[in-house]
Length: 317
Ligand code: SF4
Image (cartoon, rainbow, N blue to C red; front, side):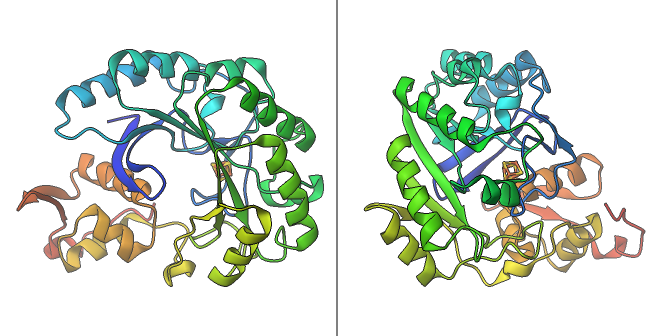
């Protein structure tokens, strides 16, 4: 599969089938906390990064063969999905071929464009993010491509709320010493009141991050921030001791781990402390290159790498 990954269990979305609309890593931002690593293609140019027709064909063939349908088809993946100029066409085509609700994970930066708001209007759930209400903090955390204005981004999200009848779940990433002081939280509270999302979900940098100074809040600090912001604000961060895992894993990291014992993708994601979506992608690549095998065992899929092959050189990328 070129554009689809998963389905992966997601705390927010249940069983989520991911659809990648842009190549890794194409984004309007280069967030200091991004789980995907540095943005090597920082842009605000909207174009057909992956062809809409090819994405829909692949999705249709997946759905025709799937034994279990996902809870959501989620447009996201390797960067900012609204950069794909065909996103509206893709959403509309999915609605024609499937009853599964469509979710869009976006940084919300392009919602100031009327054509982007119009493109998302038939989605069922849009999950934008907004990490600060102050231009300086916005630039420090999200490191946008030149030409973005925070006021314009907030106004775009507000305009989208006014026209969109589906659910909006706003995610805010809090980082210690950057956007967690009472003055900034108060500004965020005022912006939330303007944006009127259906849910507000707080996260913090508990996964491997790009910059060491993107430090997570403690569970207690997160709970206090949630209580300060608004009644009903949820904390969605999954606190895990494996916070300081390596950001970039080589093929050898995967192969050496699998040589110890056959594992499911979920096992590997836990052991390597990486997002399941990323692990599934890498496992597919290794399988397609003939380096590992995949077998079903008691209805569970296991990935294998024979110990005897460990002496052979594996790519470091
Ligand atoms: S907006 Fe999302 S994909 Fe883009 S850099 Fe930030 S966290 Fe990564």
